[in-house]
Amino acid sequence: MNSNSDIIDITHPIIAGTTTAWPGDTPPSREILLHLDRGDSVTLSTLHSTVHLGTHADGPCHYASGAEGVGEVELEHYIGPCRVIRVKGSPRTRVTIDDLGDAPLDAPRILIDTGTFATMDVFNEEFAALDPDLVDHLADHGVITIGLDSPSVDIIDASDIPTHGRCLARGIAILETLNLAGVEPGRYELLAQPLKLIGFDGSPIRAVLRRTSP
Image (cartoon, rainbow, N blue to C red):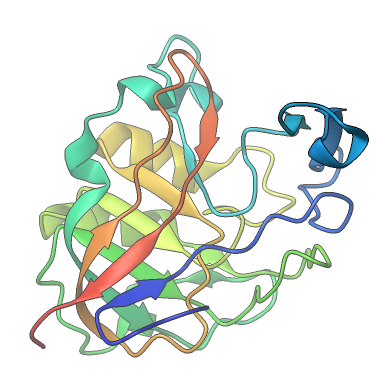
């Protein structure tokens, strides 16, 4: 995480050949078509990768047949006031309403740091996820976007992905694999727009926080 006095980068770096992907998905690789060092007029590369690359947004069609793609989701989900909340996550468990403690739910975008997924160099399958009831609780408080440090809002072996289902039912956008280590809990402005990939099930994002008043 890089930061200055105003902006905090909460995006994991993408390094071809090093950054991992969800098991069975496509890790990033770079094909160099042209290169200045070879005497070409420009350097030109092709990226081969999953669209769920590192820090990313899920499109509803990722978990619901016939749903919209990530490029069709309203931008208000990805830009605006947010609150970062830190909880004590445990491997392959779900964060519950009680785990939030007395953290104020005073922003329409809530980012949760479970502390269970720190790097994209190794894919740690023991990450914590979110309880479906927590999604309903946040939606009842006006939340329209949920983000977390883990690569999924569901635990890795949850084939029925109930938390994704509750996000769909409540109209909540999903941000995953945020780099929240070292970010102080509190209020921020979030800027985390996906690419305008029409019909796609996900998109990498460059997610940043801007400091605001507590």
